[in-house]
Amino acid sequence: FAGLRLGSVSQSIAHHSPCPLVIIHTGLDNED
Image (cartoon, rainbow, N blue to C red):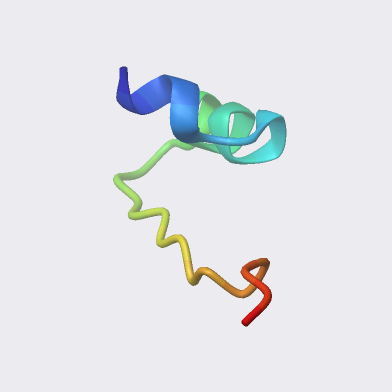
């Protein structure tokens, strides 16, 4: 289910990256 939360660009980078990586959601798209 974690893959469903990634955007298409993040998912592509995670799939094709030659090294381990961490994708961090910053929450900047939330409007307060």
